[in-house]
Image (cartoon, rainbow, N blue to C red; front, side):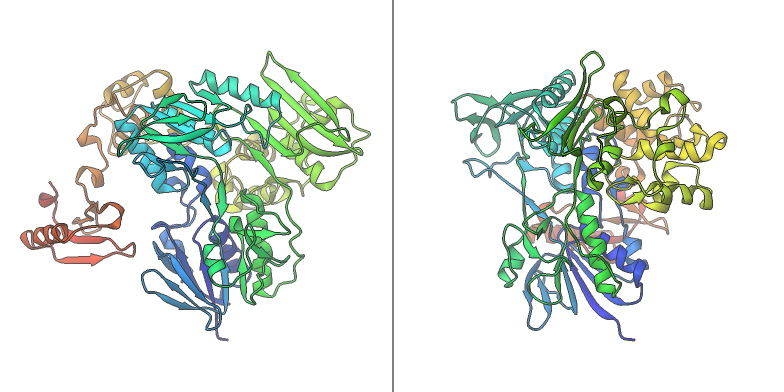
Length: 613
């Protein structure tokens, strides 16, 4: 049977997740081509804030590596922007001249950061926080500059601000409203969050309307409507996103705020579908990952001819991902005449919980300081559970009587209760995988079931479930992986110790933290060098010999011991003179092969080590 041609425009989380579902249902049904504007494989955009904060590396957030595409015979055009869809001939065209025919076309073009339409936004040092390139720009800026302003006090802005603080920058958050995260939190939770973040070193300028970015070629500050000025070397715009619909609109596809789709994610043009942040379903555009995955699952079944319920929309929740701050929000959170609020507010412990009830059903909740009830409350709201028989204390306990009986909270959860909201993984699926596959770590559960693969917010609950299922066989020591045999510390523990003890030198880290091998090894020395330069970008003196070999040689080592050298071409733009210099170097050192990579970069292959030095 001839395969149908499936083209996906957008190599992000929503679109690729749909392809993953298709491969599960009908692995041989489609000849798949994917176009992505970024020169990277699919990565976890939710974790960019963790990369910025120095908690994880860029390679840690890759969801589908290059080998995954090859394994499934998917043609990936990374770094290719699609500029035209010919809906009559059923072809798509890229900026680089590639043409691909399709039988089925999925649009997963995502969203674009909203940039304030004010004077000066085109200056150097003014950026959004949306992709890997933005992340790298901020990390590099932190090595040269000190003062940062983040415009936007929502979820994304606060994550960016926390990351910049970890890069030792002075950070001020500018917000037009008097409450942070006003779309998710009530005033009490917002002020508690502000106080906690101020303790961490964040500064807030509330009720400030930005009027102009000032400076010459590079930003020097921000002028507000009230006439005041705040100095800045870096300005990060985090004021919202808008669906990326220009391609669809130019192709005659119906567009409102997003690309309009029906209950099976199909547009007004047959065989063209849309999922993710670019799609508008029943007047709603979703920006959180769980609804996007739900859309992908429905569309995958539709394309594979599998019976499926139509997509009815999603109930969403928000969890703040700033280290040390636990915040959860869902549904309605502002009291009205029709709702009753059930509250617990412990200022001493820094805990605040509020559930809004209407007609004996939960319609929303805000949790601060302790979010362990979030999953259960979310399920009750989603399912429309009648709570009239529940008392206030039982409503806020993860399991009634669990604490008294010493039973893990997950023991009372039903098997069909969702543990990982992003990926729709239930308690029963995880428990079965632990028993049947002999899983013993959270990482193994992640690889097997997908639980905690996306935002990571459910990781503590997954670990509780692992402990509950394994019982006496549960081994806490297996849950952390030391960076090497020289230490018992995991990467997270090591970063925490470096920050807490203010360790600034390689040998100091090894001495204070009790390294088993005095000089370290080839695995831990490059890691320490990277962590120190990330945590203390202004103070740490880079140790060249402790770099990864690729960084030390400014080249990528190959299997045969030679190196691949990719000259830096900033922004993909070069000059005839620079191209001539590259050619002269290749001739001078008799480079055996010059290749144009899949990312449209120049690669000098077969370079010997002595030349790299």
